[in-house]
Image 1 (tube, rainbow, N blue to C red):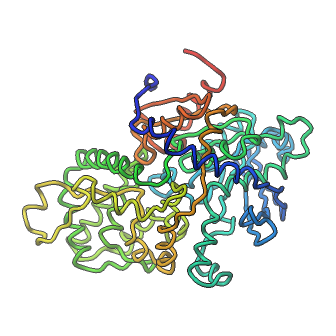
Image 2 (cartoon, rainbow, N blue to C red; image 1 turned 180 degrees about the vertical axis):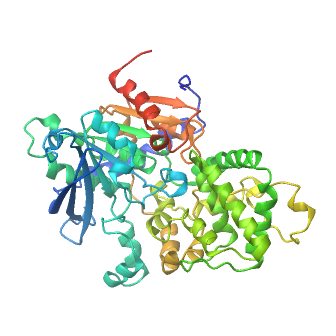
Length: 509
């Protein structure tokens, strides 16, 4: 169902001309002066898979820091899916134009796209994403990128990093190179290698579709290297034009509170169950199979799933089992603990936790924004239970609210893979020298076609801030709805893409 386009006044709109352009313009000169050399192709493999697809895997060599291209190099991996129903080894599909799929990665939470604010998650197999067949049906070949620091693209791992780096500051400086600006430069480097020899200049450009954090990257692409883009699609991925995350969390806590109310309205029995679980976790240590610790903060972060189709039901199933096991055995079974770990991916993908808040920063420090903004959020986020489990309070009173995509300092202790990064994470939270990611002046004079799906009830990407960004991008067209969630491009692909394609072809109802 489609709702009418909205034109709501934004409280931040009046601040844009004075808040961001000055620093953006100065940084823009610096950013545009950074040349991007073609990526060096290291290896290529290709193979056929069921479903009429042919896949081409490529590994590239690119600079860690494009300002110093002759220094340390890293590996970046991408996988291209082409149609192969004619069983021609993908020969026909290889000749089609590219669409690059940029995503924050695929979460295990309710089969949803990972929440906004990445980076830190690699792309899944093309066959597993319904977007692949949609785009191939539109005569594209689809390039899936493992963003730097993930998957096969020099994945961040403390054990590997300590072989190359010494000291906290070396780790901090290394990790600073893994934000959207350099992800976009990797794309540009790969584009030049794959398309530079095309005779028609238009064929040297490619299309980009960005989901969630992938949309943030797409707007950085529009800001820094629009000459490489044919068109841009974003789905739940218009970034807020802010310099630090504070305004983001102020709004997302409100969205998250609303989703908590939906959860407890649907499952009122979980009011008491969650209180009981939190009491148990506060009073008895729960060690996880991975070596981490399940404390109250970590358990309540399961609310990250609330922002996707099916997420509320997934969390209820976990709560139901945890409460049952704790009431019968005074502990959770290994399987119950594994079910919780399966929803929380930081042990395998630590980059998300380390750079989540930094991905909003432009010349300002994050200073553990989510933790600070929690103090002024709904009081139900800050409840803790200190009375006995048989106290009537477990069945009455306000519920304890789950948190969401937020990253808290306590995670650096409760997640085993994050413990070695505790000092590094603290330094990253204090850094103020983050480069500009978005060029407002360039966006205002944009010439690249942009088509955006903007979700009114999005729990991760605030609708008002996203709308402000859409209005800033010259010529951007938008589909707005209050009936789709953040992961709709996966959960309801045909609905989302049909609306975006109407915007692309200019179809008017």
